[in-house]
Image 1 (cartoon, helix red, strand yellow):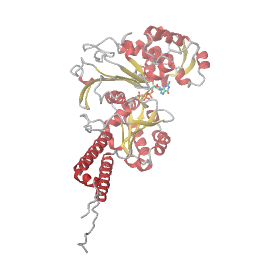
Image 2: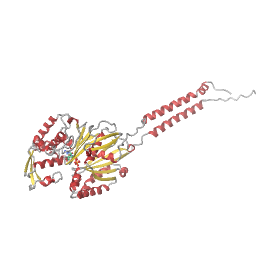
Image 3: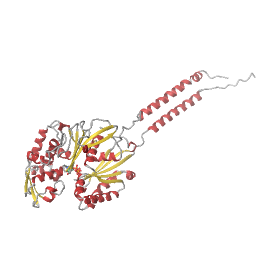
Image 4: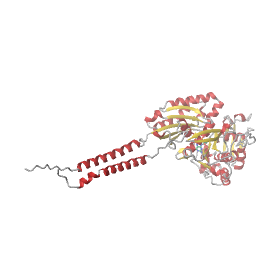
Length: 495
Ligand SMILES: Nc1nc2c(ncn2[C@@H]2O[C@H](COP(=O)(O)OP(=O)(O)OP(=O)(O)O)[C@@H](O)[C@H]2O)c(=O)[nH]1
C-alpha cells in the first residue's frame, strides 16, 4: 500500500470559538468589575435629631442624609417634625420635671421614625433660645433645674444624647442664616447669599452679608465662616425681648404705665374685652422693672382696632434716640446697609400668611391698608370668620402684623423698594427654616471649609468608558488574528 497518508483535518474553528468566548467573558468580567467597584454603596441613611426649645413651645426635627455622603452637601433633609404639646420649657420653672415629661411624646415618635439599628449612633441635641435666656437671667438655679429635668428625660431614650444648652443670640441668628442658604444650595455654589429674618416669641434675629461690613465696626455683630471654599463675613444681631410675645408685653407696658384698671388698646379688635392680671403681664425680665407701683391686681383689656394708633404705640417700644455708630437699627445697635434678598420665617410667616400678605410684590401702602382694615374688624366678626383658628393666635394678628411692619420699616430700615426683597417662608425644599438644621450641620461637621473633591467622572461615564475600551481591545485582538481567519476560510488542509 502506498504510503498511508494520514489524513488529519486541522480545523481552526474550535480555537477561534474558544478565543471569542474567552474574549466575551473577559469583557463581561471587566465591565462587571467596573460597575460593581464604582457603584454607589447601597443607600444607607444616617439621622440626627434636634429639639428647638423655644420660648413659646418646643419642636423636634429629624434630619436624614445618605451615610456615605457625610461630607457632601445639599443632601441633608428634614424627614419629620413634632410639635411638643404645652408651653416652652422655660414655663416649667416652678415644676421642672414637667419640662422633661413634656418631651416624651415627641421623643417616642422619634424612636418610631428612626430605624432601630440607627438609634445608638443618632445624635440628639437640645438647643434652648430666648425663653431660657430670660429664665437664666432671672433665676439661674431654676434654669439649671429645668435643664437637669430635660437632660434626665432625654438620656432615657436610645439615641446618642449630645447635651442641652442655651444658644447665644448670635448663634441663633448665624445658624438660621446657614440653614436658609444651605437649603437653597447657595453656599455650595458660592452664590449671593440670602439674609435671614427670624421672629420668635421672645427674641428676633437679623442676619445678612453686606459688602460694606467687614466686622471692624461693632465686631460683636460679626460672625465669620469659611464654607465650601468661600469666606463669609456675616452681620447678625439678636434683639432679646423683641420676639412677638415679649414685644407685646413691651407694648402693653407702654399702655399700663400708670396702672389703669382699663385700657383701650388700638392693637386689639373693637369689641375685644378680657380681664388680665398685672402680675402675668409683668412676669418677664423684659418688663418686670416697669411694673407700675400700686397697680390693681387686674386690668380690663379692651380693643379699639386702630392701625395708625397701634403703630404709634408700637414705635414707642423701640429707642431711636442714640447711635454711636455710622448707622443703627434701633436701641443703639449697629446695622450695615441692607443688602440682597431676605427670607423671613417663624412668626413673620405665621402672621403674614394668616393675613394673605406673603406676596411682597404687594406695595407697602396696600399692605398697610389691609392691616388697617383687619385691625378695624370687630372681634366677634373675626372669631366668626375663623372658627378653626386658636383664639390665642387669632387675637394677636392685628398686633403681630403692625409689629412686623414697624420692625421691618422703622427698625431695620426696609423701604417700599427693599420690602419686595423679602420672602416670607416656612419651609425650603421640605425643611423648616430656623436655626436647628444649621446647628446640626455645624456640630456634625457636615459643611466642609473647602469645596469637596468631585470624582473626575460620574459612575455611568466611568462604566461606559471601560466598556468601550474593552470592546475596542477585543476588536483589535480579533483583527490581530487575521492570518487565522484566512486559513479558516480555505478548505481543510490534508497533511
Ligand atoms: N399663628 C401662629 N403662631 C404661631 C404658631 N406657632 C408659633 N406661633 C407663634 O409665633 C411666635 C414665634 O414662635 P416660634 O418661632 O416657635 O418662637 P419660639 O422658638 O418659641 O421663640 P424664641 O425662643 O424667641 O425663638 C410665638 O408668638 C408663637 O406663639 C402657629 O402655628 N401659628
